[in-house]
Length: 278
Image 1 (cartoon, rainbow, N blue to C red):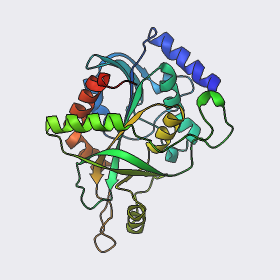
Image 2: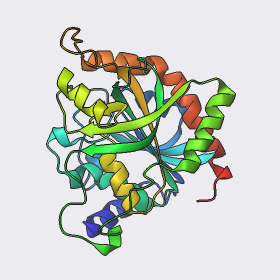
Image 3: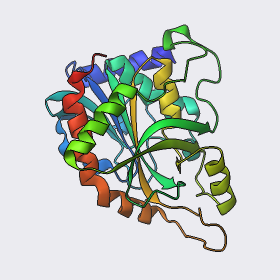
């Protein structure tokens, strides 16, 4: 794998004239509009990048964007990969390893997620403070010391410095944010009422089908991570007596409604991340 990472990085360096990003961003379901805030210098389709999978999910643009936000150089994945698409965990997380090798200082992850906490509402922005990874671990398999430790520490999966900075920005901008635990499952089915109760009991506030594998790989590489969930629906938290039908189109609609606030928060976080010594 390490050789494939280097090969992909070499290709991207050639295509971008050695562009060196400081911040990596993964734009999840319905969040591709954040790309409008990037002064794009290079846009490379995933299909043209050696060793990259291609996203098959509606709402994902499937390209890698190089440019600037608030004066800082960024590389953004406009669309991510999921285990339920049939990719291995190694393939799902391969782009994160490439971003790390490109030299990013920290990683911003976003997703659309179902709400499990009854105190949440559709459209809430939740800053992720911890996670539950309920799918195969991306580090299973032969180990390569060049990628990081065999048994990486996960006591601090989401960087507290970035969380505190985001909280200050949200308060200054009048953006209401929640905090909580994000849980990921394989999907692609949405959760049953019993599954919603189960995941809530074990400590999850939101639930989705992505993000946690990317965090595990990033933390293996000692890369700081900041994560956000957009509560796109409240799932079936009220049980079979009050079933709720969830569609992907409704998820996208709910996320698009809160997108301007998300763009403001992420843009300011990137601008002011110079306050943190990474």
